[in-house]
Figure 1 (cartoon, rainbow, N blue to C red):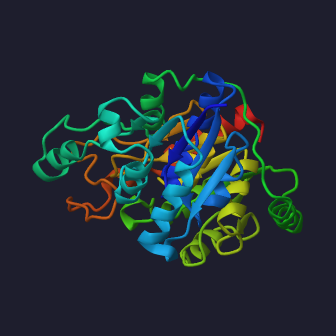
Figure 2 (spheres, helix red, strand yellow):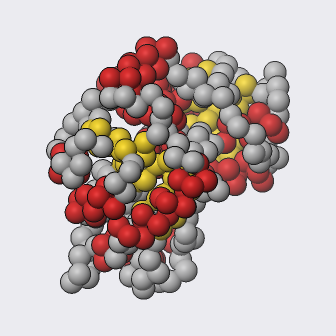
Length: 347
């Protein structure tokens, strides 16, 4: 049986988007084994994917020596294909052991596939303002699939995939649902947080959206540090359940999986909804690399000449009207999309 090794260590959003390749790989090569090399703290997410046959976990605490030891352990598995879906220093070290450049030059050893990042194009676009230097809108799932398609190792499929969550995770979240009388799943999941402030839809807009939908119930997903979610909850405490800080990463992942409709900023959980083929409304602001891919996600964005202005959202807005790209996506606009989605879903 042939083996493909996927190298992608992080981050959560990229891992989730890269997971879109596994089903297509199995469709193209039903007998292939998929091995995934990742960071130890990310591994629980990958374990939900039954198409991955083995996960190799790298603990950052073991440092460079530990990474080299891991690479040689991987080499003993004799992979047929190595897919570097990360292209960073760690993946370079692993590739140097599994498929060194000198062997690739002669066509020896495993086939090596690399997902390029177009760093020069990013420099031209974000530093020098050269238009069309990058692909926009950039869809992460497509970018992970494209190198495999070229090698005949990926086939698109619309089949709904089975996901596997640990029993303890399922039981805890289902108990939370029961305690909050959410068992009928007749709620909308709101994901208002994001890694960078520039990517966040204003808190006042979230509050207004809740008030504009008086017959709907909501669940908020966020981290324990996202205390601003209490302001959203306060807009209608009888209809808003705030899970901020009450669920860990994998539990939150499961909440998205169980959701019928998600409204989200540009976050990893938006891509989880996309991966699970859940209906979602995405609020796209300043960044270049957060666009979802699937047909179940409705993208709300404004065609402004300043967009995109940042790679990840970790810069400052250049306009006097701060975050115009998000501020001008009004709660009324989102409500309209929610109403249309709810009609179809019968929520």
